[in-house]
Length: 315
Image (cartoon, rainbow, N blue to C red):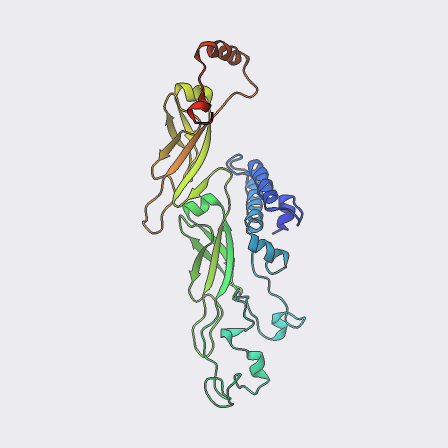
């Protein structure tokens, strides 16, 4: 992936607010819902979302700036003594735990120069003696993947490349939340002395959506309506994570009125039941103003004006 700062059109000194503003601006231009069927536009949006996911996380942004992870959020495999791990004789995937050991937590480099003895042990004794073997479970390896909001709600798959060169598809269950961790048994580093391999821990980063937000298993969205739809009532189409649906608006609807769509949220992994979607209405006047509407309101307000601020307790 390209440099996330370049993707969002930012410099490394950009503030968190700058990052959010840049993402929202680009998301409104490239979101797939605005240009359905445009493959290039969809790929561009994925790139923008992945960049935002990394830079909006303060910890990951700092690690990227320090060169600890790459633009896709994967751990960088740093060299050993100026050489690569492969040139040093063995490979190691960064576990994220801060240790500097290789396989199974054993310091094989130290053992090599101590005649096969473990630190603190005598040659020929215990599990690390000469002629013996170190026995320990393999280390876990951390990975991360970015998933668009709607795909995380519906469930999807992501392919990752393991430290041993294999690629596998990781199932992301429906309703997966941001920063959820998926454990892949036996896909970590190999164990020593016949012990099993560690696990692969995959952290899922759910990309922000231009208009959907999530609270628990419920989805919230603000939908604009016209003045005539608010006054007269109407049936409109609103987006959901499973596709657009028809929503009936009663006459006299107002900005702030909230309607519920049952079962249109995301799956709750604990209860296995879907949440709801809440649609908050926002009345929007014509832009530019309509001359006949202005004239009508001038006549109407002479005898029918009303004080909304006093009713709200603001006066």
